[in-house]
Length: 277
Image (cartoon, rainbow, N blue to C red; front, side, top):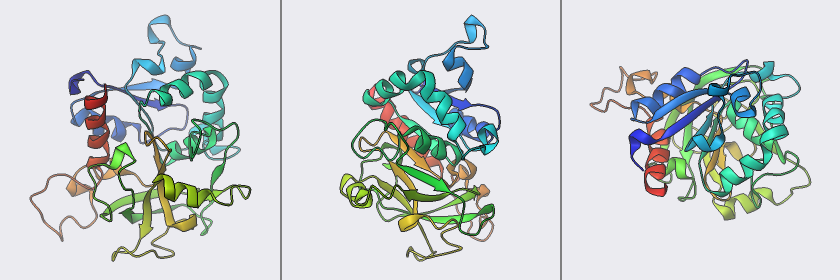
């Protein structure tokens, strides 16, 4: 598939933000992103020419924000609306190995839908994990170091070497990843399945507590994918460091490289779509 034919849905509802940065990241790389309101996929409160299907797009992205005011739990209302009418389509979309990306609030939505962690199924009936309130009990907005621990399963990070460290900013109040107590061996299964993608680390690449881990997430996990590798969620915001000058240290570490630490995530999924479809 040619890059110029790739259509990406930037999915949003009330309270979504970061959609413009997400749109721009895909557009800069030569694809055809489109802002899509969830109602367009549900075919409610929109004109006939505004209706959309998941399969109109080769990639779905759920950006950050505070969808529906983060009432009940972060991402819960967005996820419930999706599952209410799109459950079958979502399953088939993932089964056909189309990619879905969720960043920050988007990660929370993927957890609430049951698309993640997705250790042995496409989508679970009930959430098997949760992104809880940060240990600091406050909104954390800071640069965070991420170590790439994936061995190649995740299609979104195949341009990043294993063990490579990236500086990508976090901005969230509910980012502490925890798993259901009934899933005692879930971390082990995720390690075996190569589903752990990023971990929070200090500048030396070592696992560390606060402030390097801004939320207290179990095993310092910052991003995970499903067992297929085509559904990926992470709390930090790669769309905010597409260019090198968006990094906080860019004037202290001058380089000829125009691009920042987030660009490769978007480029990797585009490369995947070009070859797959």
